[in-house]
Structure formats: structure tokens, C-alpha cells
Length: 408
Image 1 (cartoon, rainbow, N blue to C red):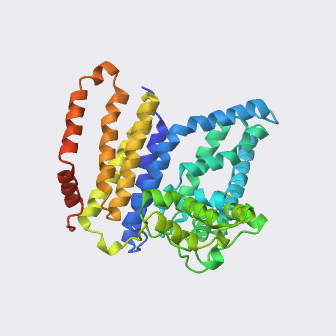
Image 2: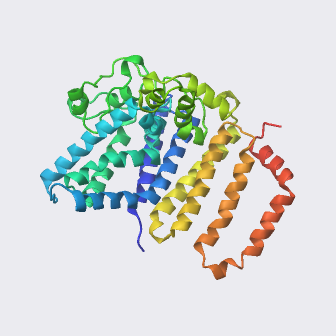
Image 3: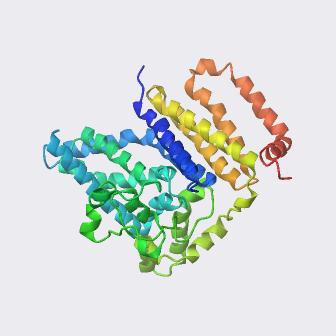
């Protein structure tokens, strides 16, 4: 049976997250906030799911560019692998730097910087939108002549290293501080301290920051997160808040020149009032963490554990699943992630999302079985739908009472 061995990255990285948590707890260091960690992992789950749907298309793009427009006939060799590593890291530096300097690119990258914690779970805060933007930069590699298999292999290798620099447990690393991006360097990059802003963009090598004047060593204790904290666990708002802010700011801009400046200007100069206006339009309320109940935490934690197990199985056997099944499964998981974020904020509308999730679960058998087999389950599905419609209000009250035990 054909399996995707990349699925095993999930238990491996989850194991490192758990190990880091245990070490931090043993050292009595409060490096983990439960709800921040859940929000971080939720975003990582969504990215991994979407990645299954789009990775093949990225490979195809690299392959077509290299075969039709590649400048040099590059073949595998040690020196060329080293050159590819340096080229990949160089392109990353410029993608990363521009993502901090242009509002439109910051809109897809900002998600990575929202957490006010700094630990291995933060490395999971990558969105599929970011993957699309980065592909535009990686497209330079096949244009040079690097073949698609080399590029995808290097991107996998290059993507592993940054996971291990998202930690506060490791101090400075001596001579390596002059060559590699270390946890100390990357802590600076994630800090919201004034002196640390827009520094240390490198991913593997710190040499680019030193060459282009964006290097800053770690001195004072970093404060993590955005300069204007988001204060929400909303799965959707974390992904799209800055896009909404740009839209609000563009609408408020009076001239075409001002609108262009909003889109392509610097985040540092962005109108702070746009956030307030966007939050008002979309009825976003800040979280009051004091109201979080322990049973509620357990409910969300178990959902996360189940989601990780399902994600592992999904990626492991994704070669045997139809496109329709993958899409249906992805929608179901996305609705679960939206629901978990809403539960942590104790939203009353979560029951509606729960109903959508149930509907998507009911559709999955149709995507997996042959049509003749689905006819036998149709009456059961119809009966379930009828039951939900008839007892809608009773089910809603019961669900909310079950989830929010301390709420009326």
C-alpha cells in the first residue's frame, strides 16, 4: 500500500512540542499559554491540510518553468546542492523582508507573528496563502535551471530547520551565532520591542542580515507578538484581519494614489484606526481569558488531539483518496477549527458551525463509497436531517449547556 511518509512529521514535531513543554514546566518557566498553543496548532493543521491539495500544483509549476525556460541545464551534484541551499535561503530572506515591508505581503505573513508566546507551536503558524506567495519567489530557482525534484527536496529540508529556532529554552550558541540563524536571532525577529522590529529575516543563515544591514543581536528580553495585539482566538479573524483592515483603509482613501499607498505601503505606517473599524464591521470582540473554564479547555484539547490523529491518517493515505473526498474532509476539519476558536471565545453561534460540520460529515460517505452503496444510507441521512430540523432549538440549548457548563 502506497503511503506518504511525510505524515510522520506530525507525531515527530508534536513530540518535540510536548518535550519542550515538559522541560519548560520542569524549569518552572511559563513559556506556554494553553489557548495560544491551541490557536497556533489550529493554524498549522489548516496549512497542512491545504498543502495536501496544492503541493502537486507547485511541483508542476517548477517543472514547467525549468523545462521551458530554465537558463542552465543543472543536474544533481554536491556543489549544486550547496548552491541550491544558498539560493533558497537568499530568496527566503528577500521574501521574508518584503513580507514585513509591503502591506499586501504582510497580510499573509502577519499570522506567523500574532502569538504572544514563543515556543515550538509558533512555528506552526503558517498559512497556505503564505505558501502561494513564497512559490512566486521559489519560481526563480527553476528559472535558473534547478529541476523540480531538487527544489521540492530542498524546500522540505530547508523547512525543517526553522522549527527548532522557535524556542526560549536554548540560549546563545557561540560561534554558530556568526553563521546560522539561531534561536536567539529568531527571538529578536519575533519581538515587538522597538529596537527589534524588522530585524533578522534569515531562515537558516544569518549572513544575509549582516550583508544587508538588518541584523540585531539579542540584548534585552524580547516581548513577543504584534505591536498592536490581536486579542482574539478566532480562527478566521487571525487569518484575514489584516486583509479586512486593508480593504477598510482602501475604502477610506480619497485618491487612487492613496489607495495604492495603502496596498503597497509599509505596515509600520498603516493607519491603526483601520483595525478598530474592521472589528466593528465584523463584530469582533476581544477575549476575556478569565472566563475560560477547565471543562471547556478539556473539550477543546481533546478536539485538537483527535484532529492531529485524523490529519496524520489523512496525509498518510492521501494517495488513496479522491479529490472530492479530500475537499470534503478538509471542509469538515476547517469547520472544527473555526468551532474550536469560537469555543475559546465562548461564542453563542458555535451551534450553527456545529451543524455545518455535521452536514459535511454526512457528505463524506458519498465521496468515498460508490453510488449504489450510498443509496442504502440515504434514508438514515434523511432521518438525521429531519430530527435536526424538528428539534433544532432543543438541540441548540442542549449543546450550548453541554459546552458552556458554567453559562446559562
